[in-house]
Length: 187
Image (tube, one colour):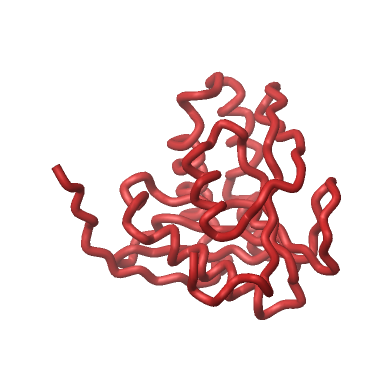
């Protein structure tokens, strides 16, 4: 049986301070949907409490070196991406002005609908407005679906780092892509 994509009306916009509460909710919800089945509840709870509260989201929205893009579907917040401007990873990266795609999450029901591509294209457009020459991100070694998605956008493995989830030290791959080698709006 063929899966029909839901009818969507996608809008991407930059988060404002009024979005902190809804962003905290969607951030925790999508993170748990992606990783809860693979991790201990106490580690998930510790990480989410530290990372996704309204106060933390407020701080991140107001931070001048971060931009949070919100994806709304039919007016409902359904995903987001956060970019940390001009931040280098702790590995060898040939870049004069790298920026990190720190978070990239969508509601599960939007996976496979083209919404992720719309959001990622918006990330690239935002990066092209800055001096960023390389985008990089960390992705869990076991998140094969995300790895495949990022590789479609030209991200290649350049290193790894530790991701602390509660008391659990995990390994994330660091992937990067050069902005100049990517055509606009292409995966």
